[in-house]
Image (cartoon, rainbow, N blue to C red; front, side):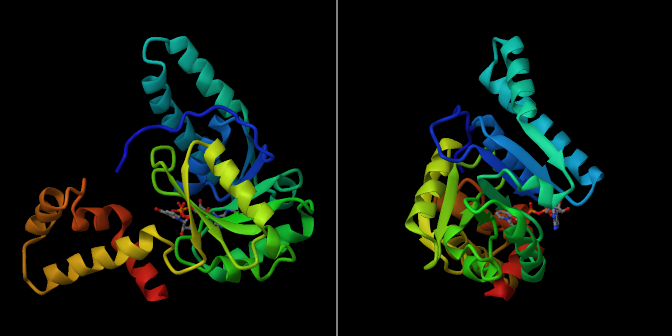
Length: 265
Ligand code: NAI
């Protein structure tokens, strides 16, 4: 993986108000990169405790970024952190949280019925121009969008963990996503410092479609007793130049998460 921080400042983008629903591992990272890029951000969670967790996670992550970016200017680093934190608001009221959003990014639990309930609710209250996006890893964007009346203003924004570090953003266009929405999503992705690639609404998009079967095959190789876990990882690191072995990566992603994705396919 390429390690580095997204540090781009605000750029001309039609999207300036972003609401991130779900402030967990991914949502807090998405909120952070948006605020770093100059967006006004609302993070929406189920309760105050979850909001506090998100805030703490972002603060810690920003301190790490500031240490790198402002090595010799700790005062500027402090200002960077407080400016970025100052662009974020916290909310437990979803209806209120979306009412002035240009873009809503959903990063809640990976369950279709929960996502449907959320999007139905916010579709009724968000302004007409608001674009909706899901960060789902394994569900169909078109199916998530099906409960809304704005299928043309719906796409996928698939980030990678840890969001502030990983440079890639997969922008997903369904056959109902309008060209205008797609362009705005691409533009916004670049404005928050990511390199974007485009993929159709297909299982696993690009990265997981290739990565998940690869990791599963490594597990099968191990289960058959063909090679030890250590040797499988060493083989791919030294023989294919990968920074992590497949089993190490599988542990990082989570065995449960990977199994869940495979079962879904
Ligand atoms: P997480 O469990 O860390 O965070 C989910 C958060 O959503 C929790 O804090 C939960 O309280 C909150 N939440 C649940 N229902 C909600 C609702 N109705 N309104 C507001 N907040 C709600 O999960 P994580 O890992 O951040 O994943 C979120 C999404 O991102 C999933 O769709 C997942 O597939 C996707 N994703 C995950 C990646 C990963 O590496 N973990 C990578 C790329 C995408």
